[in-house]
Amino acid sequence: MLNIAIIAGGNSGEYDVSMKSGKLVELHLDRERYHPFFVEIQGQEWVCHLQEKKIPIDKNDFSIHVDGKKTRFDVVFNAIHGTPGEDGKLQGYFDVLGIPYTSSGVTTSALTFNKSFCKKVVASFGIHTAKSVHLLSDSPDPVGAIWEEISLPCFVKPNNGGSSVGMSKVNQPEELEPALEKAFKEDTEILVEEFIKGRELTCGVIRSGGTVTAFPVTEIISKKEFFDFEAKYHENLAEEVCPAKIPARVSDECQCISADLYKRLNCDGVVRFDYIYSNDRLFFLEVNTVPGLSEQSIVPKMAVANGWSVKELFTRMIEECVNRF
Ligand SMILES: Nc1ncnc2c1ncn2[C@@H]1O[C@H](COP(=O)(O)OP(=O)(O)O)[C@@H](O)[C@H]1O
Ligand SMILES: [Mg+2]
Image 1 (spheres, rainbow, N blue to C red):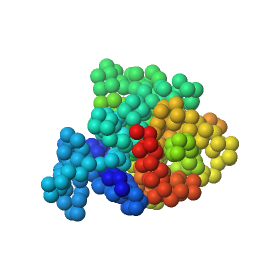
Image 2 (tube, helix red, strand yellow):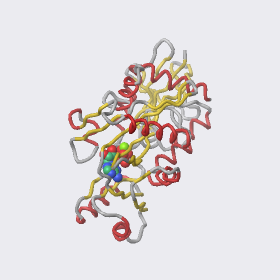
Image 3 (cartoon, rainbow, N blue to C red):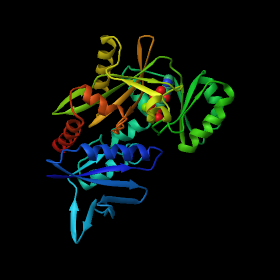
Image 4 (cartoon, rainbow, N blue to C red):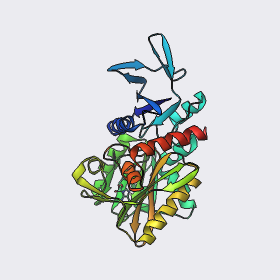
């Protein structure tokens, strides 16, 4: 029986989503193999939820002490979206302690969490990406730099964010400055990207039993102007069609590119690649190395469409990371 610390929470606008992901993992974990412990990490407060009590985590070795007995965890199931679970910070901590975790390693997590750096690397593999400008908080003339490169409509995003928090679609020039202000509230870096008109596709990829598998491609049809925070978490505001009703040629290409990116970016665990399909081309938007795992999330549905139960998905993630270590 392995002790599994399911880590959830985190320090971003994705806290609530992460808590839901963690709960779904706890619900579906195979109790014949694993003993789950729900560990909430928020700021300096790291606690294990144990029978209505919150037991502080000893950060020296990531353990808990209960009734004079120390409990250690064999594996970390990472369900923290955003910092510090998706950007490499906790990966570094667990590497130092020698505890295996279900997501990608430090470098891959840090690179892919930075949308701008990630796009540059992905573009170097010959994949299409939207034209964009990366701004730091001390950029002398952000608005000038944007107009020089970008035409409307465009997206203004925190460069290191998720769940569309702090993001805006800018249709009119006067909307740009408020959008920049909103994004700078979430992050010290901003990514401004040209809008690509097309259909939104996403593809989950996992390494299991040494084999890289791309799940059936899913189409996201948002009733909002784009797949914003509300559309992501309100049942009736977006439809996720899995498998997507697209020509086989397109879904094959999407799976092929995604599996290739997974390998080239050196990913581990389950990862989701987002695209816009436009004029018969796939434009890479971003990669999520800790994708949502809640009841409403896409990856559990993809696994089911692939013929796996949610329990099997989680077992495969844990077994792969134990074997990798
Ligand atoms: N360049 C773009 N063209 C068209 N739609 C976009 C573009 N960038 C983002 N979007 C829309 O915004 C959503 C969120 O953007 P994304 O970059 O995936 O950020 P997040 O990490 O917050 O999910 C996407 O799912 C898509 O609906
Ligand atoms: Mg996204």
